[in-house]
Length: 436
Image 1 (cartoon, helix red, strand yellow):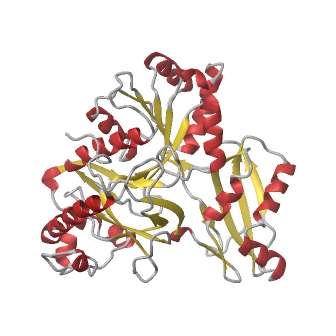
Image 2: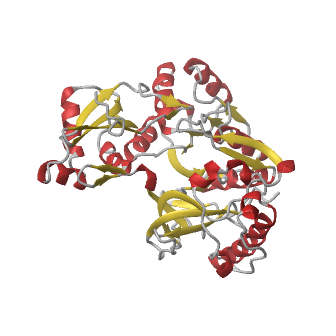
Image 3: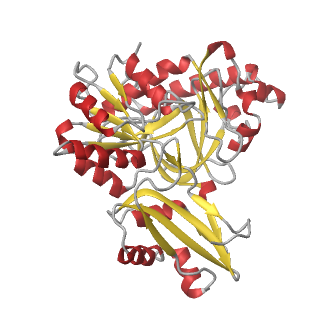
């Protein structure tokens, strides 16, 4: 098995040529065998990229509604993963055995991008992703490390801190996979079992599953003395889709896993360096092939060479389209706007919730932040900082259609979670006609 895909090609042109040939072959397989595509009379035997780009997009709503129609080759099924179902019917993801090799190669490239030498016999991974149920990240990561012949400590997200500390001292992992929010809690607890977290001598920490804010990254790096690498992915299509290198300037895509398109609202390709919606087409996983899947994630895309020397294109996450909050007076706010404010306060974690109510025709926003410290003064400072969001400032002070924001600080891990992640980022009580 070839361990490195990053090193397989000498130029971006060579990589693109491989991708396009693989894409046409894979898409034709999906069109010939996929129940979803056959029922909708998709054309068959496409010949080139031009014909491929005439194929329709499909959305997450369609994927959820016709979920089982995407199961194409049950005989090659490796694992079934699922969303939590907190917003309705759980969404199943069917992973085939061809993804196993893809995970091994992808995680290998991820580690090498972070400066981990795969030939080092002392490598040990520590997985703090969820491991049970139908979640994808933990089991997939463990399987990849097994394929790389790297031992892994699968602690999960609910490990007892004393036990976790004891195991880590004995086995001595040199890199960790984690969610930022649960890792904050884990760090606070495990820190009580040692004089200094740097004693664990962790070299690299990989963050996935949720946004990694600058203040959270800095806090983790300072406490653990390790470099922190952000990941991006889609459990729907193949989990990891990109990771940072040591330059920390965008995500290098996993070009072996998927064909990437960045499009505008009309479905047209944007220019290099511009922002648009990420559209993914599978290049692996014949058990559940996706063709032109609109992710609702907004990214910037660039083929400019990276200082690290890798030729793979990079993407930068900007926001999610379906996280948009529309307030009275047509003001628009993305949680990413709030995240920029959060990153200015070292006391705050990356976890917060926004409750929206309406009083007398004016919207009232209550921001609930998990914080290491709670005080009225800090709440006041955060509330004032939130009004720096341009659309919110205008609606509060000029149009006067939105009330001054309320900020509440709660201890870490107080907000409701599901599988370690925040259950509801936005709670809109306006439609229900309720107030608190």
